[in-house]
Length: 256
Image 1 (cartoon, rainbow, N blue to C red):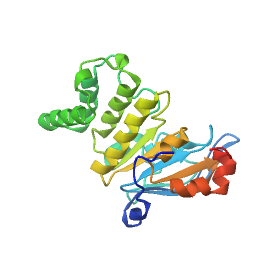
Image 2 (image 1 turned 45 degrees about the vertical axis):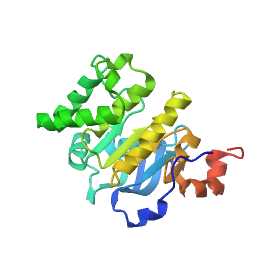
Image 3 (image 1 turned 90 degrees about the vertical axis):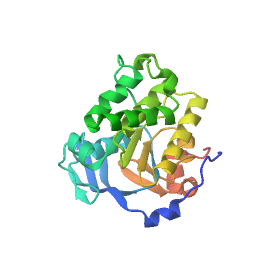
């Protein structure tokens, strides 16, 4: 498995925590989704969420952004208990960016119009807004498709657009849900480089990626969490997880 970045997990001992879940449990009726989950996210790191279908990975994202509330436990962001904060307050007060697995853009608006639609809510000064839009279009090499409607963009261009929309507010936490899904090998490699470059350019941003493509994810994260049977069964650097017996038996298997 070729790595495209050097791991810097030791550096995060000095980084500030930006969010944490404390003894969070969630169930829908009699179905337990999460059972006493606790973990911390720090500034400057890329964290991966792995696990089988239905393990609760996307649910963790929904809890962090405020789409749902836990039955028990607390959600802490920037040292504040935000468990009862609605989704719009979390996004505005705590600078959370979210890249959903599907959609996330206006199909009948051009790429440029999509960025303006989001930017006008966040950035009031017109010059600053246009400067930010031009900066993102240049950084993500989207100038040649800026006047194309969202529905006509390629899969990779759509993902780039949604990431740009999430970055309009300079988020301190960027959540990416299944960003490699249904993409070809070259597009996945391009997006991996985008993520790694974001970490270099924004050293205080925490990037969290939920993904099924374990090899692709482990090549860019600094550490990962593996969910199985409602709990976090393993956590650590990619190198340590590949040697973890629980991770092997519950997720990777013997042939990974």
